[in-house]
Image (cartoon, rainbow, N blue to C red):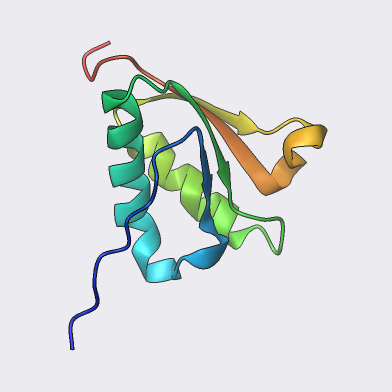
Length: 94
């Protein structure tokens, strides 16, 4: 039986803890595109600390995305290295 798509509210924060690893690439791509459409240009993606594998995967996906301007670890009060702050471009050709 096919699963229903999960509707994720588009805000400036995305917590990946509830998603399956196989869903992350499409989720990140769609989330970034929707944020730009909604004029949200700074987002925090929570990937958790763990072993760092998910963080590396998420940041690798973000680096390949033409809508991403920059990526850095969140400040300590916002998750530190368990979250990434991502600056998005206001348009794909910027």
